[in-house]
Structures are given as structure tokens and as C-alpha cells.
Length: 86
Ligand SMILES: [Zn+2]
Image (tube, rainbow, N blue to C red):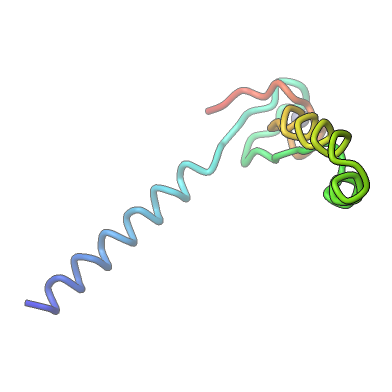
């Protein structure tokens, strides 16, 4: 009985892993024709963010919001922002 559960769990885990893999944000870039996995871009840097937070709360807060808003996906080859999801 226990073995059966174990086997079932294993199967299930493998399946969900496969699903994750196949859902790995495949894109097509209309700019350079790249096809494959999307790259995530975030502007700014964590270092600046930490320094700002340490010295002044408000600029740190604004910087964090700006970074979150700047987060986007793009083509890993040419950096084009408006890629088409497959
Ligand atoms: Zn591209």
C-alpha cells in the first residue's frame, strides 16, 4: 500500500515537473526572429535599492516601485520588449 502511494507520488511529481518545463515561457521575437525561452529583465540594481533604503526611506520606496514597474520580459538575443508568447 505504501509503495503504491510512493509510486503514485513519484509519477505525479514527474508529471508536474514536465508541465513546468514545457510551460517555460516560450516566445517568438518579431524583431530578430528568435524562438525559445524568454528572458526576464529588471531595470536598476539591488545594490542601489539597498543603499537608498538604508539612507533614505522615501527614495528607496520610489526606487523599488520603479524597479517593479520596469520588470518585463524580452528577447534574450536582442532585448526586444514586445515578444509574442507561444
Ligand atoms: Zn529578438
